[in-house]
Length: 318
Length: 251
Image (cartoon, rainbow over all chains, first blue to last red; front, side, top):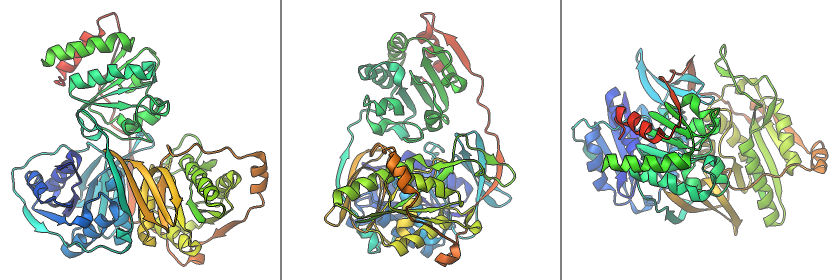
């Protein structure tokens, strides 16, 4: 098995999810990574520790904006020139578009939303939780390159200590790949870690009672060193920005700890967070569905419990 | 302005996988994929802003998907093209994108719209594969769309903030469900939809094969979560949570 992993980066950091996929690929066989962008050569140092044998760098001013189609061109050339049989991606807005574009370009099978990857009797098998995670589907690939997108947080980046060889990748862009242009990028000012990379997420739902009460969630998140998430209901109500939305129409997350404050646990939300390591839920409704899948549930008033919890966590963590 | 909207019929209500075929059970009632209604709505708005044009719905699915298409026609789309063929059942991304691209090549629309995901397969990637086959630019996850002067400009959210991306037409744009509130069809729209043209094509008509490069190997039940604890707050819940987190080494 010879695998290429797309190493997405932002603000000079390779995404943790992508490094996790690289570490997994290195366990299964020969793995290489590719970094695409402008002025990105130094990023290879970060990636070297995760088990890649080669790190390809496509460094070109034309690749500066994180647009998918030029990245399809770069990856397609690498697959053709180096004969990779597998190309893996950690899911993101950008990675999904790159993966699907590459699948069409190579006429290759793409399985998405995978939560694991194994080798069974010499063939690659992906695990995909489906239908609100009520069933696990084992998926395979036909002939040709095998492409896959993994749910965020699926694999931990494990350092293997090897160093990789840095190789320049060819950059030759198709006409249609150059057509779209990035006009503006406004990065959300966020304190603390990015939602999909965070080890801890504290999320708020309609049970908070009003947008002003999100400060309770923010303070607890800060005390725990985590990020803030929100349900679709509160985002729709305008209490919190859409970029924090977790669930079927928002982000899928899998932190080590997920604290749900005033969240009922509707299926649309559940599918976005149920792969979390440990789930703590606080809700005043004892019949809320979230208690069916929370590891630790508290029936009570979040306005009483959350400030106290924040204080105790602060004391504990110094 | 000619706009094509790719839509899908999805099973209505609770979805289940047929354990024998290992495919989604599509035998029951079908509905227009709710995410696609946002794309249809956006097409209607773009057409209005352009002062006219045509909206054609493009779909692949069972013959009864014509009913779901009629709902989108009732919203105001002008006509529909449905590719229906037994040989297309089980088509994956590679196969479906090939078939839709073949229809779109015939239609030569200025703008091709998609909804943000399929509510049945949870797929959210098709637009990019179709754009690649059509060799046109693509903008995904668009929450605000402006189409003017031969260009599409989309504002969207990513994991890191907002992007504004511009592309010359023809272009493929996938809209998020935050972009608009789809209208309900009026009674007049529902009555009018019955006489709108609904074309049905086979794979042979298009001269393409659907096919799949992925497969389902097995189904299994998800692993159960471990023990769960549920307590009522007696004034001490915060301390109990801290204790639980400490035990799990999460502090």
